[in-house]
Image (tube, rainbow, N blue to C red; front, side, top):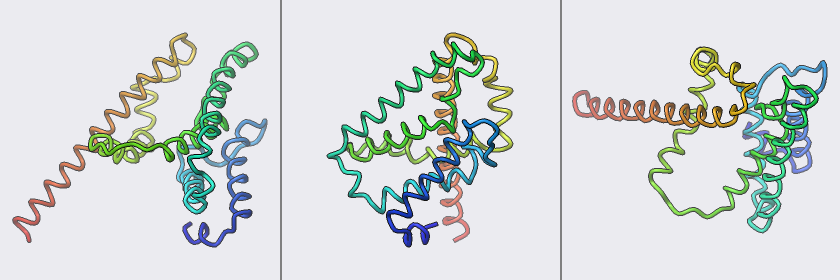
Length: 206
């Protein structure tokens, strides 16, 4: 992938990203069209990797001077997502969450905008935040793991039964926080066990 990123010119890179955006964020919303993947797949990680590669390669195009556009894009996407809940609930009550899914084009735009906001924000060093941030990828892998996924969402969280209640957003935010904290704790334990094992190996095995 790095070779592709390195050899693509700017125009072709933009065409690739647009194609991937259409495949993963627009096609799922078009009738009778199914993309053979979902936003929890390895293929989608490739899509995200290419977006990150574009930001890195053309870093100067995403400077702090454009911060207001990133904020407007982020806030605008959130407003549209919240508005979609009301509008779609009136038209198709059982599909009010259509633009809140992981393949939502609005979510993709909001995520990219939030990344650019964070990228151009100067934050002082904080050891605790850095440790938690370092476990984010582990959190992603844990909560999307193929074996654990149905157990977590269908048997523990039971997400479907909460989709039609008035306080579903609050419940989902609470669940997200609990899962993030729990998965982060698991990763901390993994790191501790690994460090302990390595110390033991160095001391007694050499």
